[in-house]
Length: 354
Ligand SMILES: Cc1ncc(COP(=O)(O)O)c(C=O)c1O
Image 1 (cartoon, rainbow, N blue to C red):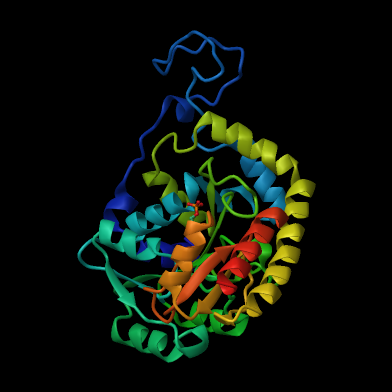
Image 2 (tube, rainbow, N blue to C red):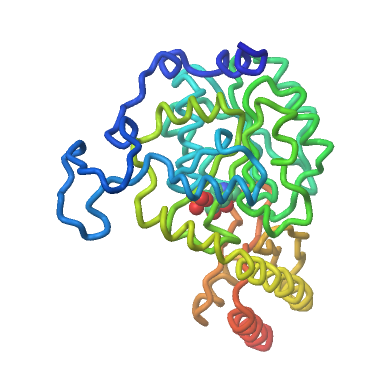
């Protein structure tokens, strides 16, 4: 076995390594369409959906492989990236024993999944200016080099919107002994390069992405893990046999064929984002508009609950993130269509003049 495979195996849970995955009818016979299929106790009456889907969608895998330039054996498609994150916890973290590290304020599911899976969460808050706590990360590694199984963060980060510096991420990849999960849910809106380009350099790196943001398919539930083939193989052992339904497989593929339209929408969001950022900064009750690399803006206002309620009363729903570390009186605002953004600005103007 290569060094990388050994390294990954050493991190995985013993029971997962020993597991024989459920072998579905579709796993055992990956067949020619005109055969008579009497192997899966399905209904024989064709309606487009009477057959079980493929355990992983072959067409989607090929499309992702060609768009992102990653081999198909390094890709796993999940029921949203939330399922991918859950699979990572379950494959690598021993309940009641192992720990994960994440840095608030960040995506709330890292904490929720630690709770669900009974995995200890080491929270190392971001420092002033939402900077990575580099010294605290190094100290945590020194204190518990064996028990820290994963470090998770999103870049661009939710809810702050900013990306972390590549040099610091590189340092984390060098010092952290477990898996480093970089959640790139918002990467298509970012001016920074994806870490997919560096996947082959770091065998313990997992990059997650999603169809839910720039690709416009949050309702389908499609998320992606890109990682070393050994990590993908471990995740496949524990995933539900048919985790992606046929409709999502079809619609997801169709959406990726409209790549030019996705790019057009991303450009429009980016243009609207800078218009919004400038306009928001003019309101007297807006104290700070944070720099963003995502499809949303974090702003600090005089009184977040009051401004949230005033917007709601005018039919505009934003997210009050005040309870998050370092986000006192902060609202998170998603960039909408040009007309939605105009509506938001009209309502803020109304609020300013009352
Ligand atoms: C950083 C981040 N990761 C993952 C997700 C969830 O993505 P999915 O819809 O693929 O489960 C979100 C959703 O808001 C997110 O903000």
